[in-house]
Length: 456
Figure (cartoon, rainbow, N blue to C red):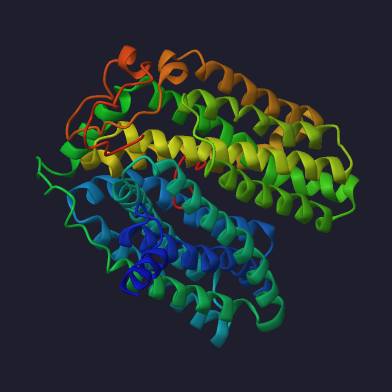
């Protein structure tokens, strides 16, 4: 009887690698994912319902992106100096407050554009501090040979929250209005912050204070720039995210309007992309590619297919199939990237590296989106879309020229504090490397949704 009860308790706790921190992080990320993706829709409709036009919607969206870009690097340095869970809770509190005030303004009257921009900017500031801390916390809380599976399941939960949050948010905006959706998002941040307050950082080594935030940023830059595989892939996604973001945000809806039958087919195609990311995460719970970055980077090439499909343009059924495939392969990259960062980056530098990763992944997106219209006027929509597809292929092929991207392999030895890299490249090619380590602490990441590139 005692043995059966113990077995039941073990099953309820889940697998050994899914510790308390992992469960809290996954649950809180799902909660905020549900609220945030519904709130994005609600914020746009709040602007429209006050008489705003597409330009005003764009200004509110830009107000969130600008502080995100400006404060990401500082957020990474702060998260590596202070307990990460405290940074996360403080950021959640700021997001909760800004969304609650936004909701009150919408529910009680007509908020002005500058007020909505200011509150959205506060939300972007909170995200800039939250994201590096959250990614560093996630990467440091998983150990053992099941790290890849843990990251895949975390991303599955995140992608499910994106999918469900957008659908639920759109329905709630139609039924109860954008103000109540913003209020629900504020409540989601409050709940997630309460969950994250219970995270345990006792297993992490004490932070060694350096010469200040600027010194930490310089140290993070040395850590980042000293790894060609790292800055090469971040540079790749700086360009790929920018052109894909422009194609999806600007050209996709226009092609749908002119050739596919309107917004509904485009929404269906985006839904298939979301389903593909979930399927890709399921795949990565089973598949453990030995050459992590090679497998992940090869799976980035299909990211060019949606732009090419829109350039033709293909029928809706074919576009949905393309989006499904793209979602699957992009998720393979995402899990492989998280596993690589977990394997290669010392724990005390994870948040700073994550900040540089996030910064590179989002910095060019506003510029590319702003230039999409002029590019269409200058070259035509079809040529612009083919240009987007070509750039994805070119930068992905270029990053394969970096030897470490082709050679880096999955292993089990942890990277110690201050270790400059993952070891000798020749050792990384040894399939038995790490098997002699009696602790087998690590097997080897964005995001995100709360993770980077594509992440990234």
